[in-house]
Length: 457
Image (cartoon, rainbow, N blue to C red; front, side, top):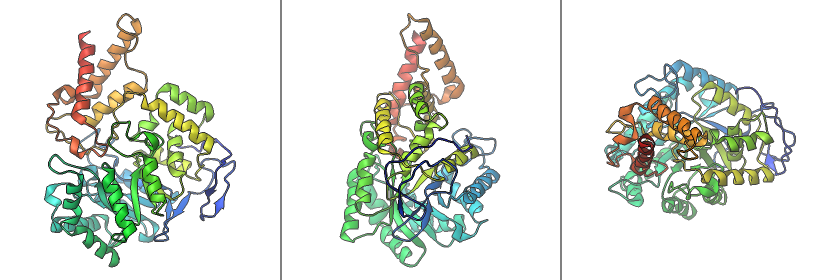
């Protein structure tokens, strides 16, 4: 996983080298060069194309909070991984007051403060999701606490977190105005930027494209200037975000809207919550036939890093082997060629046909008031589909009964009985928090119906 792959390709499209000068990259070998960097035209920052997402930090005993909700962050491991990242050229670290049960900023601050402040860029967010944080004073306090936890007196990249969402009571426009406009907090953040406490101001987008378009219109009119914008981009979302029932927007539209304005894009979910790293066997086979020694995840990371104007691609690297593998991918980047792009669009068409839940395991839906482990349920179901473990062929086939037994036993082993989908009462407290806008109770009931159908055969 961590070794340098030897896959090579003649890249047909123009890209840029570490100094941003146009080149044609030929016969590039993964991991046999330096980290690829992109320059932010608004600030001159030379940012590593691979950014470290601090949303899924390792916990003591292994895994993440999703695996062990009551564990503590493994600070020693975080320090070790941050050290490795910096040593290998990564200089962009993305966190939030909402990540890791509110502990990500503190852990990130501990790890980064051991290094010179000018050796890294910190990105964090105004994550004022809760009504208790909607007042001007509460939002200001959240920002000040971010500075304290991160052990710094300025934020390099500050985002309005997850614009375009809604709640049971407020539509997307009402919620945006309540969080950022009516309380005057956006104007206050602009003042903080002028004072040097924020170096770049932007937003992360999920949901209602009308809000995205409105903020870019403000940019065009000079009402507010966005130094960068964070969007979800991967080869599946490029054309099929709407078809995936996420109520998100196709990445092609989002990227082109930013690029046409010269606004740098920060990319989240290049693997779509790990989905593009755990593909069905028949798709993995197609990728391995083309590049036998490249992990399937490398295709997704290369795709996300290829477009001009992309500043950095975030990856939530819980494990050291993932960190090493991703460093290899971007040291240097092999941009996706036109022929490879056509191949990935064909792969995306095949994936769209699979009956998966577009969950990225962000855990915003948790905790469930009735004890369900929502991300784990979706993860088990999705992995069963992608790994070909679902019962097929009908009850008359011997293979069907073997697959049925494996599926049901695996379901019980992976998700305790009291945390399974049959305990969902449809209260819908989870759905408004989902950045992918999944109709969570509907999907849970669909999975439960499937499980009950298998049990009754």
